[in-house]
Amino acid sequence: MEAPALKSILISRLRFIGDVVLTTPVIKALKQHYPNASISYLTEATPASVLAHNPHLEEVIIFPSEFLTGLSILTKGKKQLRFIQSLRKRQFDLTIDLFGNPRSALLTWAMGSRYRVGYDVRGRGRAYNIKIKRSKSLRVVDAYLDAVRTIGVPADDDRTEVYFSAKDVKWAENWLDKNNKKGAQPLIALNPGASWPAKAWGAEQFVELAKGLIKSVNATVLLITEPGKQEAIARICNQLGCAGSIVETDSLTRLAALISSCDLYVSNDCGPMHISAAVGTPTIGLFGPSCPEIWFPYSEKYGHKALQAETDACCGRDFCIQPTPCIESISSRKVLDTAVSLLERFS
Image 1 (cartoon, one colour):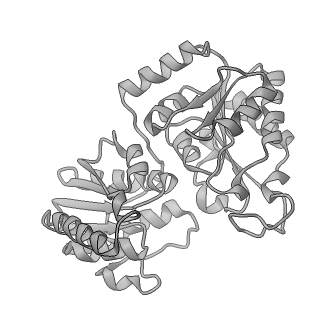
Image 2: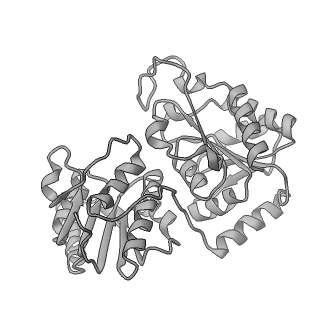
Image 3: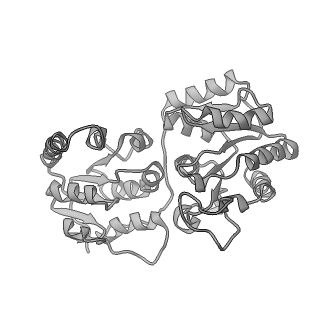
């Protein structure tokens, strides 16, 4: 297909943080091919923040949270209809659905765009008049880039991007200064959090890793957490005696700015892991039931490395049915050796 002439484009990926970060090469490819087109992005509030300063977007549209919970079916229906009507009036030339669930497929169909692009899966292909032609690649970033390749837009750059503001940088600098971390070398951030229990490497293993980093490379270690998770991470911090090293913020762009100041980021498979790679910080991703061949499209030549559970018996579930989660088969020694190797090459 030859790329059509377009003036206005709507990209839709309603959730989650990591998935939205992985769509950023699509945004860039479209802007490079259509520099004068207006590009908008529809997503939920939490992942929207990682797009807040993206220079290739004219607008980020928040999918209202009240559509999801807390209202009667009738009230939800009325509100959704008004929201859809407001978007339909925008008359986007092209709508690309990178989520493909029933709600996003319906939204895409309701846009009434001349070109409606989406995946032909589970009967939802009827919402689109252009079905995405998938390549053989397993990587989800290629699944997203296949959407623009299908309409004739070149898409060879698969590097992700997350931008942040000068205020975010100032916040990060102030945090490091206030907590006596500014200028520390090497500065290494650890993220013990995960969306699902089976994706969480053991707390004791994070403690062993941190102790190893401090001993072997005299590292300054930061522990990343989200609001409401302080108690669990405090236990790790107490074992390390690292008062003042817990980074807690609900701002993803502030977190991005802080991570960009680090020499290395070690994380379970979760949204901040993708943010780290996107801002260019060497990143180690720890994988249990999820597959790095799909979810970690980051190159070792830029300092990124995925480590996977060393077992052939993983149940592949978000809540592990084994006595010990498979991800804990990744030894702290292996992570430490990988971390030291990346620091030697990229610091």
